Amino acid sequence: MDAESDRRVRRAALLVSTMTALLTPFLGSAVNVALPAMAAELRLDPVELSWVATSFLVATTVCLVPFGRLADQVGRKRVFLLGMAVFLLAAAGCGLAVSAAGLIGFRVVQGIGAAMIFSTGLAILTSVYPPGERGRVLGFNAAAVYLGLSIGPVAGGYLTQHWGWRSVFWVCVPLGLATLGIAWRGLKGEWRGATSGGFDWVGSTLYGLALIAFMLGLSSLPGWKGAGLTAAGLAVFAVLLRWERRVATPVLDVALMTRNVVFARSNLAALINYSATFAVTFLLSLYLQYVRGLDPGQAGLVLLTQSVMMMLVSPLAGWWSDHVEPRIVASVGMGLTLLGLVALARLGPATPLGGIVAMLVVVGAGFGLFSSPNTNAVMSAVERKDQGIASATLGTMRLMGQTVSMGLAAAVLAAYVGRTPITPALHEPFIAAVRVAFAISAALCVVGLWASLARGNVRTAKAAV
Image 1 (tube, helix red, strand yellow):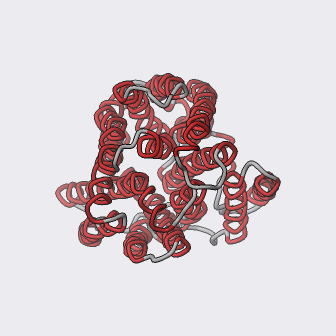
Image 2 (cartoon, one colour; image 1 turned 135 degrees about the vertical axis):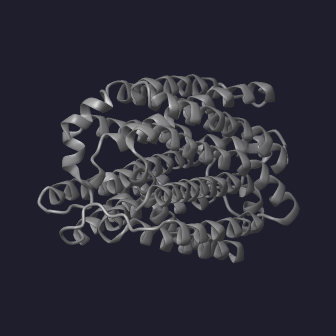
Image 3 (cartoon, rainbow, N blue to C red; image 1 turned 90 degrees about the horizontal axis):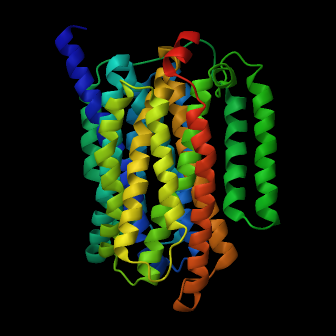
């Protein structure tokens, strides 16, 4: 491939990766604002509402690592294109759903398509850009994520208020089709990593069963059913670890996690960071609309603060991580997130909206400083042949963290509010639940800060791989 063709492929890869990085968080944040409207039409309680988001996350998390390994073997572009098609068809299905079961079912299918996208997008991007430029392009990629998060609450609120919650799903279709066309024509070549050996079907099955049981268990806590499912998930995961050490091409490379400290602890830091922060917009969306009486558009404008800060900070953080060890930048970000969550744990029924905005500024700046340097650390700590599985592993940590965050929020809401719609009579226990959820999130951030600081240096790890 000549230099000009190489530049065109790089531009196409960056554009496609950026557009998909924008699309999926846009939909997620827009759905959060539309949840009360869905509840009113479909008569959903708070726990069922959480499943509109959690079903997508569970499906994506279960499929992410298997699709990452499959993409390394059959080609990342091929899996990416199929994933975009599935994602768009499922978005249309969500827009046509007439029942809660139908909506959640299409969200599951959409999660499967998203897994194909997430497991290949970053891998394609890091395959075509050299190590010295990755922090910059990953910063742009992270900025697109936060732009999607920024647009989502405002656009979702506006769409829901004027055209109903179904329009939130339909608006994704044109952007997705444009991305599909650019990927089809602009990504010349087919990137592969580990191509030898067969696909680990047994490991993939065990992996899926372990994650489904674990995440269903978290979302069903408190109670014996939740505890039993969580324990079953952990038990199957232990069996999975034993199996993966025996196969030549494991779907989950346990050896990569055990021999590469930077890779392992960077993934742990990502898991904890998302576990602590993802439910912030979910909980605040319900708080602002139910307790403070804001309409969806007004709530979206308040929630916009966090996403705007992420968008502004992440490109600078990505550039910074090309020149300073990523663990330093990411750890500063984790510390800021901790401060913001501690402040949110003191939320009350009359907390000034300006104070809430200030808290979201701190959380957003912290997350922006953490995300792209942490991604840079993960992708730079492995060899090129492992970038597909590294991208999928990081995506799994992100999505598992998001699911854990939603599971904890659902469990706390179930314990304090019960499985009934939120009414003024339940505002006091609802606020207590929100405070407890944010306090747990702050405690998680303390552990995440240790993992981020203790990961070691990227260059040392890369030399040892």
